[in-house]
Length: 320
Image (tube, rainbow, N blue to C red; front, top):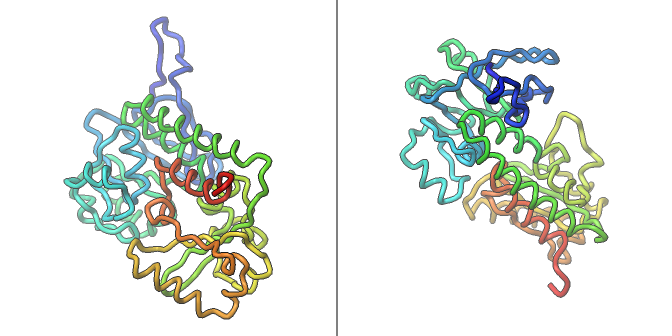
């Protein structure tokens, strides 16, 4: 690793950025990345990171794609996804697809000869990691579980792309929008919220450790499922009897699919549950389907849009 030096030969601390362990968030180093292999002293995770003009990167989930392009980068491989906005989909339309996020095409990834693969730590199975390691392809695993993780990832990607200023501008925009939303919530009653993440097979309650759970906390709302929270879990199976006792003011629905028929099926499944109609939020028509592209996955550089959407639900302007 070669730290930035100014004209007088002194360390230029203003140009330095920090890199943290994606698993435990410990500070590993500050500086500009050229080539580094580093082991976290807390959890022993080893990362190998290379940087250069011909840097070839593959991203395995939509949030990584979004953040890397937001930081001024371009990819040589990306996942098959419908969770990105039209303008970004247009930019990546000619980038080779390496399969679905949960089950990427390993042969295709290896054929692209990437210098680095970007992934989140919740999707990749160990056999996939082992195969990539045997092929000499490093994988940068990271967490994108909360708002702070977005900023940390953008800073790192800004270094990889040689566009730290561009990444910083995105961070400043997101931070500014969150501060505005937090100011809007001051002196307003904190709404009690239940978040249901659903598929036609199963329903879950989002806990504070989930990304949307983190946003709800930052917007000074109350996640009623926090009473059942666990340090290691982001979601728990839906318990509508518990929800009825918790008396949420609003219920937010997140579908695992962008197809309208899936969302409709989820609503219909909930309607037949005997406890559903007893919920005051249902009786008062305070049930909202959240936009798939902002909430089904981490919204990445569009977190400001997710913040605005929730803020307008929680703290509507007077007269609306």
